[in-house]
Amino acid sequence: MTCPPTTTHDDPPETPPPTIERFFRPSAQSRVLLTLTLAALVISAVLGVSVGARSIPLGEVLRAILSRLAPFVGLETPSAAHVTIVLDLRLPRVALMAVSGAALAAAGAAYQGLFRNPLADPYIVGVASGAGLGAMFVITVCAPATALALMAVPAGAFASGLATVALVLVIARVGRTTPVTTMLLAGVAVGSFTTSLATLWMLRSPEGLRRAFNWLLGGYAGGGWAPVAIVFPYLAAGLAILQANARALNVLQLEEEQAKQLGIHVERVKLVLVSAATLMTAAAVAFGGLIGFVGLVVPHVIRILGGPDHHRLIPLSALGGASFLILADLLARTLLAPQELPVAIVTALAGTPFFVFLLRRLKRSVF
Picture 1: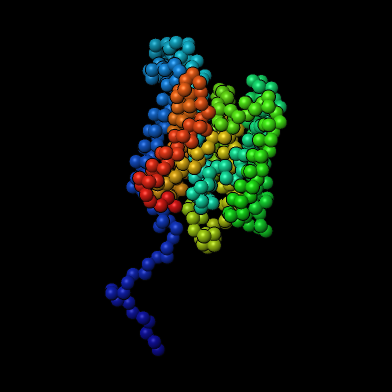
Picture 2: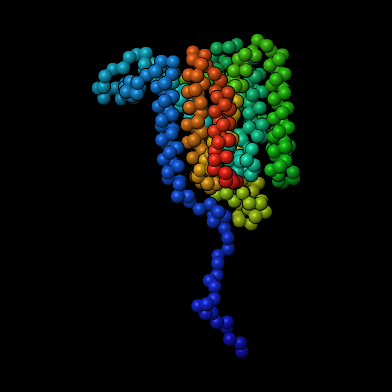
């Protein structure tokens, strides 16, 4: 008869097996970073509404807003011109820039995590070039400044962008799986093809060349609150889906086989994440044009400052992207006033030096 092994106090305690959560512990800086991003969003929105070709004091801005939302307050009545500028021109523009920037930045964070590629951005699977092709077609066919054109350009860009991503997924499919490398290569190939088609269409239709070029560079076309009402549901739904899959994104930073062992249905997660991020990007591109750099820079900056946990990275990227695009649009319409620059030029000029500065200043791995 054998005796069971005895344990002593000198025996080392049994260590639990490593889990992915150990690599994504809550950061002590999370609350500070959340406060800073919220403050940046509020400040940028205030500046975006009050600063312009005709500056409006903050008190007058508040009175203009309250005059329509709460006329019973009894404040001093603002001028009709200020009410029109604030509520019908600048506030809708700031709101559209906010939702578009949030969509692009959150989608960029999802794409970078999904592809485990620091160069990934919302346009990597061809959604931007596909949306550009659809917009080129509509712009050159419809007459400018008509109600049909205002409604058809976003619809054409949205539909074409989604069709392009669907084509990329079909091409990248290998059996029952969709390898990340194959998806990236298919996105580059299809994106280049649709860009060439859009350029060819522009050259064949010179009468719409200027309007198409302005759209490609992120020229704001106005439209009041309607674009905001259309883009916001896609942003809200996309953020909810990405946040629900934040743990899966964390696990996917490992190899796919390890992710499967940790209970992640890799192929289903890929499809869900690509679909959600693409819907957000297509909605933003449809109304804002091809605004680059937001989805590349903002998630990197947030990752450097707040860590790689996608539970925090996705919402903080959305807040940072909203602030970044609002400020970029403010610079676009004030730097050379009364001439207005395309916002995509400002995002590239302002974002590149800032991004390089952060990388060289902090000098730590972002993945």
